[in-house]
Image 1 (cartoon, protein in one colour):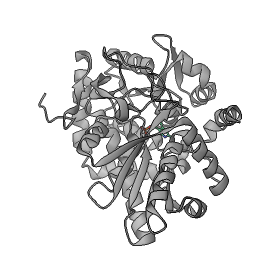
Image 2 (cartoon, protein in one colour):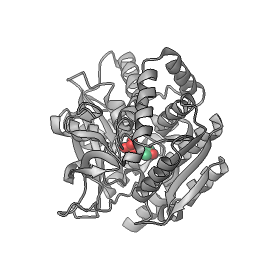
Image 3 (spheres, protein in one colour):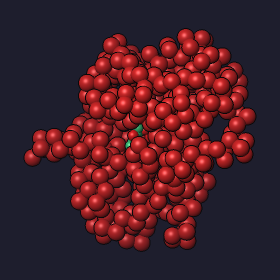
Image 4 (cartoon, protein in one colour):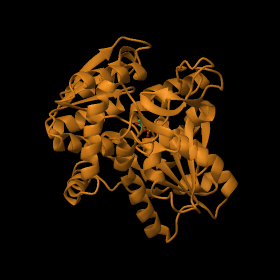
Length: 393
Ligand SMILES: *Cc1c(COP(=O)(O)O)cnc(C)c1O
């Protein structure tokens, strides 16, 4: 493989078991044919509009702007079908599956959000769907497992390792290696071996393309800053791409600071990570001095991943995007404020971005504009948030 294929600076590439190479090469080839294909894009646009409900609006948050001190705008990915940005990617990859003539899709899921978005397109496009989920996650997120089964997917519990997302991902890769001819693996974030980080980013770019157009229309200018939460990094990379070439727009990625800076207390991969290899890519990882991956922690299960998309690792190196972390309790505080002030229940993941936007607003003052990617709705989080708020009292 040429060094240029799927690299972002020194990060990215394809470091997966050899048995997956034919599948990854086939995917790369078909994607290269389709990425510039008008008919494919027309089809994609059709489903994004008529099934997922795009374009999602941008909302001027009047009350947050008054209280926080800068103009706050929200890109409303929470209003998409299934409640987050994840459907943008699963629709795109389901269409790729059909183009490859495959009839079966598999996916890994942690909290279950990507599993639900995959089961959804599996039902709609008539694809046999299998979701791998760690047994520990199955216990914690039973409702999402029920949702997936309701949508016709088979949910397989994984009992290896810590029985969470990392183990479910390994199991999905094993399935893919055995069933490559019939099956496409829908990776859920801008992670994994080349070409996945590129494919997922491209399917999420619709967020940034829309947001830029909408913002220009409403204000005749660009925002001063764009803020998004970073787990694997797909919603963030999607919105950032709309503004990357506009140097006046500052870009901020916000990681999960968890309950402290110690090992096992956070998911702040860029803040604390070192280069390493996980799930087929070279990126920043939270690991100990021996290179053992440390278990991540966050109140938001969607940010609970020990790695980060390789393109974010690259942007942190070039400095085009600045990365910060917000703690569990800071995110929970922003969550409550946005509920009460705007009548919007944000996902706990998105609440990390909101919490950082609040700090930024204080610095920026009333003349400037901050656009926050509201990556998803928090209906899934209300029970957990309620418990945590009770604990803090
Ligand atoms: C899954 C999820 C995330 C984290 O995934 P990224 O790939 O980092 O975007 C963020 N927000 C919500 C609402 C999610 O469901």
